[in-house]
Image 1 (cartoon, rainbow, N blue to C red):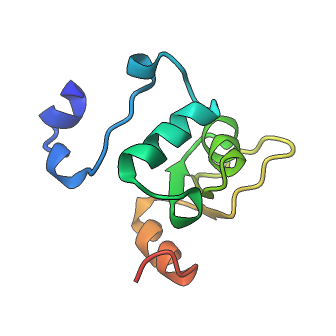
Image 2: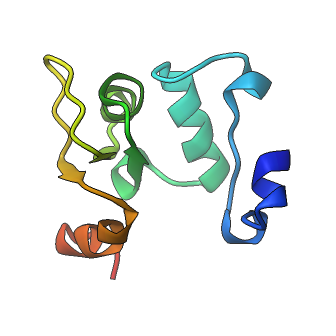
Image 3: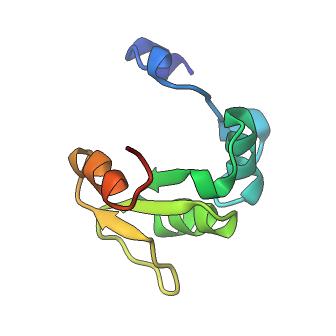
Length: 101
């Protein structure tokens, strides 16, 4: 939380979920479900963005979220819905898939 606050990001975030506070870690489904609960949204309404095929992509997909992977790391059996090179591609990608207006 301190790192996010120090960088001035807190006003831009609707919810914060931390593994150290929940005492569980990704890809555990409870991490993703807690974020969904905090946002008051269903998994189908959300996209999860991360760089780890196992922790981020696999975990998000396991609860029904659309998974966006940053970078080209691979893990056998894990396939994100989309891979982007960097965050500058995120909004156009989400628009392309109809996830945002």
